[in-house]
Amino acid sequence: MGEVWIRTISNGLVRASRVTEISSTRGSLHEDQGYSLKVVVDGKGHVLIDDADLQGSLVERLEYARHMEDALLLAMDECRGSDASVVISFEPERERWSSAPVSVLSGSLPEVVG
View 1 (cartoon, rainbow, N blue to C red):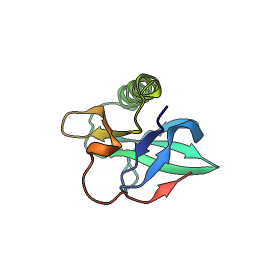
View 2 (view 1 turned 90 degrees about the horizontal axis):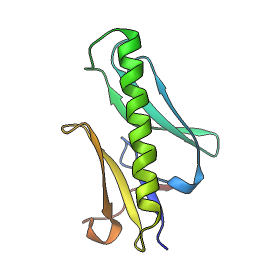
View 3 (view 1 turned 135 degrees about the vertical axis):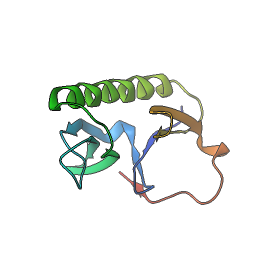
């Protein structure tokens, strides 16, 4: 059975099996609007989404962030049964998670964490 990896916004990879927490914040990393989403591996946070453009009230933004957390969990579950190693990435232009076998990805692999 292959490994499941998650791509961070800094183009690093974290091993999905080592994720201990998925959390989101009320604002992006640089502004008090939008939201950000991160995973925690070995006590260190890794940002997956930093969206300063999401409009709406705090409640609406947090609800959307929870929806993205649930979608990530679903993507992780769907990839766990794969025979090949898979990378899960967030597609900001489509606002969804996608997965691709590592063998399909071109270029060198980014930094691997965990």
